[in-house]
Length: 126
View (cartoon, rainbow, N blue to C red):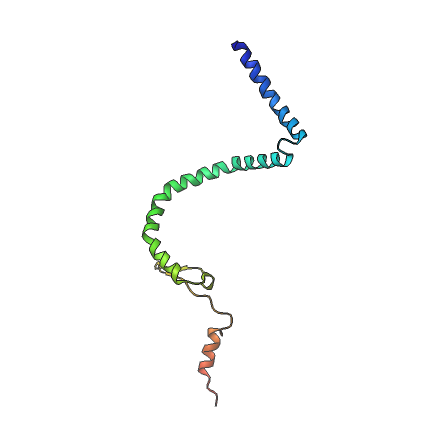
């Protein structure tokens, strides 16, 4: 009886692709597009697996320190987010050599340039 199990398993494995092909021809199985999409996603998962493993390792390393940072700075960042109405009105933050961080507002398009303003102040019309 044991000697029949191996041939039966091999026949089952060999007939599986034929069954899928027959099902496709009959319209009951996945279409070529569906099979292609499955193969594409499977290949993408295999290609991305090393990068995702590296990302997971990095998160395990920096996770505790990031959690502590968010616990400490979270309320302050939430207060800033509540006060700022439009983030697009600000330039990117600038870190000064002494460690201070400056976030400047972008100049308005219709405002005169600062240089023009200084020149007008020095001239007196009579």
